[in-house]
Amino acid sequence: MMNFSLPLLERTLLRHAGFNARATVRDTDFVVARVADAAPSNWLFFDGEETVDASKGSPVIIPGAAFFVDEAWPFRDGSAAQAQANRLNTFAPGRGDLWRAVAVRTLADI
Image (cartoon, rainbow, N blue to C red; front, side):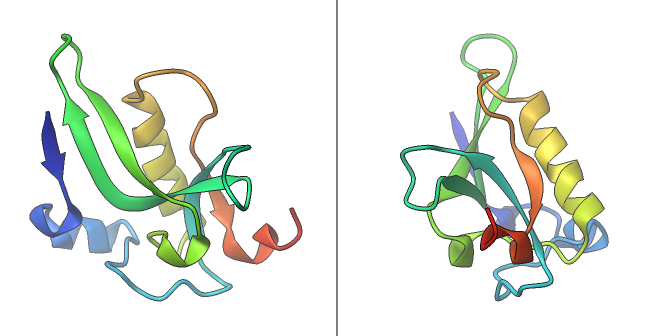
């Protein structure tokens, strides 16, 4: 397994995609999250780190996750957050609860 953290990735491409490295999460941001009943807020948030496991043929991405929205990687744009969620879902090891873009301002309402 290989572990990738965002500092190793091409920062220019991430910036063009709306990804903000370790920026403060604001109410106007979007995050990538999935439902998790056992989590304190019922959500797991993508924290920007991932492990790629290609040991069983097709590579799968095992995303890093945080319990609290303050620890999530914020996106200023909902379409960029959804593109990241789609990428994680495409390479997910299972088809359980899927990752999706969520507006931070709506988390208090859910």
